[in-house]
Length: 83
Image (cartoon, rainbow, N blue to C red; front, side, top):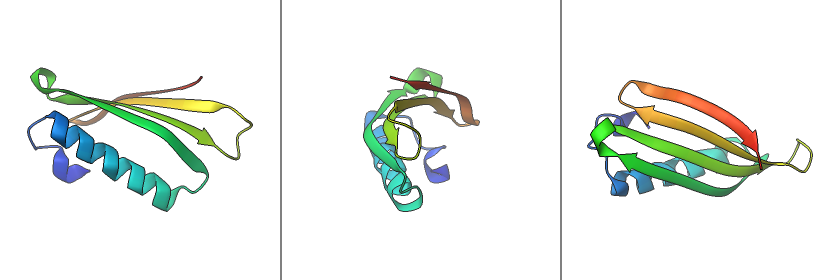
């Protein structure tokens, strides 16, 4: 993902980031079943807001939402909740 940090923030790049995240989770974290990845581009803030909705097989029957913001400074903030 580092290669995208200094690219112009745009919706097409957001789509690529979503695909990269999905492939990485599928490859490196088989316990996670991704339901949806929602990435919104905020060009004026030079930032992406990322929401990942997933099930974690080893953690009860809850569904999780991971939220973060990615900017040229790296990962700015994160939070986790169940839904």
